[in-house]
Each structure stands twice: as structure tokens, then as C-alpha cells.
Length: 440
Image 1 (cartoon, rainbow, N blue to C red):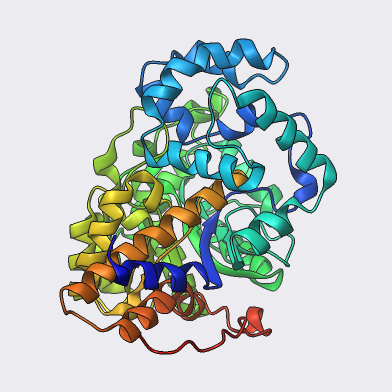
Image 2 (tube, rainbow, N blue to C red; image 1 turned 30 degrees about the vertical axis):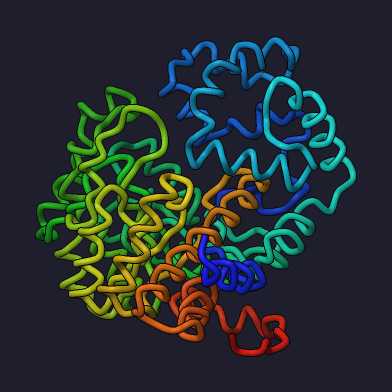
């Protein structure tokens, strides 16, 4: 690496940062007390790479089961683990093992001591403080897990996806319980959605999130109220109720869903809420990735000009499409959550291209997007390296000087997400002041 990279790496690793998206338990006390290192580390992400490498689903169930002997489970996973450790998912876990537990990497020689250290750290407590604050230097994370969270580490996002994906009586009953009101009509459904949103805002929610790309395409048409109401009423038809109201696909109530998504966008607009949208790659094996092309959202971008749409995962593999959208629409923002471990190389390339094509205030550089805390550490480490590498290349080719590169690093890792998600009030205590260094 160049001397420029060394200087920028030092600066970037010294920054306090913001984390745009997590799925970890909202408090340390909610971690699974029975999990061991394999069952927790394979909740998601690297488990998909193991399956892609050839591990059978039944074998995965065995490997994840903490009631079975660790050594036997490792033997089943080991050949696939070795085949997949080269990925960003694999590297993030090796970094966690190295820096959090003092072990070089995860393999047959280290799996037993790693598990012992993992269990001991959980029993000792204070693991969130050590990993999130001291090791990862994260001031605050936006948590996709309800408003009841430890506010030393998190602020919450809110989801109204269930109000959009109404397809049967069972789902309506669940929404009635959630909103605390009866739902007999489309108007009731819209009111319950609004009430739930306002209750969540009062409880501390800072933005909205939609993950509906896992269930349907991201194109939401402008639908006449009468058409949506007809689909709502059909939920209570004799045929639907006779079937127990338990079945249904997204297509059965597509117009109702489209109508309700526009309703959610209107609510976000009225309340000044940033709207996080899952775009690009879907977690798991065997998905329809083209359902999550960010360009499918274009009609929403056009209509709801005052809503900030924060497009997740750099839209990978549609990262260049997202660059065009963010360049053309003032209300479209780029979020690197999950991206740096999906493909470190693609993230370096995308960051470089975005900085050449998109205003720098529209990019959030890191979101761990993990269900377990150790993964967040590994991910932020890769993200910092990637950003330092991108900025060093930018300086070395004369696109900016070292001071501007440092400013860009702080923008994407701290200042931009604070502004995009309105977190200034939540961060009343200022970021740690750094001692100025002599200009080199």
C-alpha cells in the first residue's frame, strides 16, 4: 500500500462513526444464553456461503445446534468453511476471532478455545460496551428491532410492512392487536397504520424501514382507492374465510399493497421521516434478486420529492443503477450497510465511483446489518479499510488532497448519517475531539 493509504488508514481507524443499520438484540441481556460460537456466528450471512459451497440444509441444522458436540459439528462444517473463508462474510468472522478473542482465525485448532472465550465473554457481561464502543468506536446504531432498546447504543427504525402486506384475515387480526383498534375497512387499515407509526415516533423511532423486496417486487403502482378497497373487502369473502384466512400470496392483494405503500410514503412525508429501503441482494439462498432493483422505486422517488429514500446495500449488484438514481434525484441516498462484507472489492469500486459521480453528502459509509454483535466489529474493520483504500487512490491520482480525503471520510462515516437520519439531538454529547496532527 502507498504512504497515502497508511496516513488515511490511521485517520479512518481513529474516527468515531455512525452505524446506519443493525439487527442485534436490542439489549445485551437479550442475547441467547444457550448459544455457542457456531450457533451464533451462523445465524445468517456466512451460513449462506457455507450452503453455497455445498453444505446441505440438514447438515447446517446440525452445525447450528449447540446441544450437539462442538467438535463433531466443526468436522461437518470445516471443508465448506475452508472453501468459503475467502469471502467478506468469512473474513469478518476471522477478524472478530483475532481482535476480540486473540485467535488468528477460525479453524480446527482454534474453534474450541474460541468457543470458550466466546462463552466467557458473554458470562462476564459488558460485551456490547467493549465491542460497539471501545473496539468499533460506534457512537450510535440504528436498530431494526423495535423501539425497546438500550439507548446507550441504539435508536430504532420502524416497519409498517405488515400494514402493506395484508392478504388474509389472520394478518388483519394481528394488526388489530398491534394497533389496538378494530379494522373493518380500508379506511380503518390506513388509520391503524398511522396510529402505529405515531405511537412508535413517541417511543423514540427515528426513521422508517421497508424490507418488502423479500416478499414482492419493489414497483408500487399508483392505485385507485376503489380498486384497493375491493381487494381489502375480498379478504372477508366466503372463500377466504372458509380457507381459514391463513393462505395468500403477494399477488392476491397487489393493488391493496401498492395503495398502502403510497399511504406509508405520505405518512413519511408528513412527518419528515427518512425511509430506509432494502434494495439489491437478498439474504439467504435462492432468491429473485431482480425484485429488488432500486430503479423499480423510481415512481416513488418522483412523487414523494420531500421524502429521503435511503437505499440499502448500495443496491448490489445494481450499484451503478443506484449511482444514477442518487445523481438524478435529490431525495435518493446511498447506504453501504451490509455492502462491505457482501463484496469488499465491489464496495471499494462503488465508493470510488460514487465520489466521482454523486454529491458526497448523499453517502452513508457503514451499517453492520448483523444479528450478532461480534460480526459488527469485523464488518466495521473491513469498511474502514475499504474507505481508506478508496480515498488513498483518489489522492494519489490527484482528484483531491489529503485534507479533503479526511473530510470525505468523516462525512461518509459520521456527518452524513447524522444529517440524513436527524440524529443530532440523540448525539448531544459531541464526538470525541481529536488532537490536530501536523499536515503532511
